[in-house]
Image 1 (tube, helix red, strand yellow):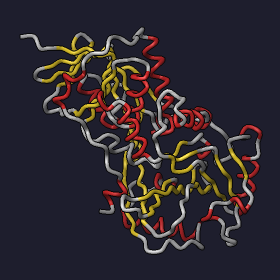
Image 2 (image 1 turned 180 degrees about the vertical axis):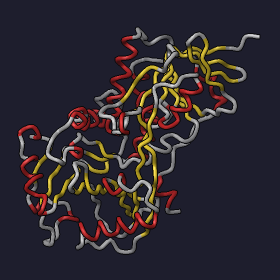
Image 3 (image 1 turned 30 degrees about the vertical axis):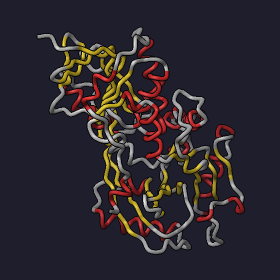
Image 4 (image 1 turned 135 degrees about the vertical axis):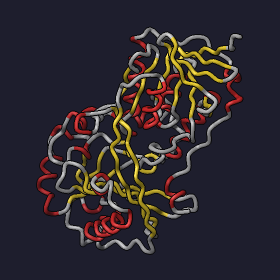
Length: 398
């Protein structure tokens, strides 16, 4: 008995930022694209993001630009074009938390940072501020360092996920691997349920850490994946003003990164990243919280956060495997070995998502895949729709 089949241009597995961006970009271009998500849209890595859209300066605090910082220098401008509705995806409904991100240095590091940030190559990307323009948490007379404003912005990630999901909700479906088979026949990947076979011209895997298992289901072993862990600290507090800033330290990366968020009940919260998060991946939660408390007391001793509650969050950042587990400089898109119609992609960081979108465009052009007829997707309605992921600051502080 022949199973009914459904043909689409692109089938996407994974409903985080990478998959949702790809779905929007491709359907805007006229492709019949459909997305499948096993859990909730934006779950795991995406919803854990601090929402920073940066141009790489935070990787250059050692006084030099590297290939990684140069590769993403145009990202803030591209995201801003999307927020105006002028880019490859329409983000006009997405909430912007801050149009600015700051960097502060203490007096001992001020000369090194100042000379680098004054260079011509950073003109327009970094602005040295005078004291009246300092953000409120750094306005104390006790602060003796220097403050810079970066050409970066911060998005509300739940709003970003919701905006992308609602634009093409009719093409987003849940997937249950107990009732669906991901297979490969004659080097062509397909999805099959009991009464339906989905045959895409191109299968796009954008499931973050889940890509590893999907590649294996297709009978392949490459591209290989790596996991770079981090453990962030979340503090719910009573300080009223928002703060979005990096503190420079002895390393090229920020010593501490602070971003402000709000719980569903309106309580202010700080997400603490930077070296604090990347250098303490295996530190017990209680010990890391003590380290975070000491950092804030040392770096911002004049600040009164009021009553605080503390949590930690350990995550693995999924990426293509690099030598010595280094962070990739760009988004990654590559073929699945032995499968002619499958690609796997990792943005490697939120800000590089448009970079992955560009790579998808180039790959489809190279393979001669153009938009075809739009099939009736109601055949997939039996799968149901995934929900939107809850934020970690709401689940951890319940």
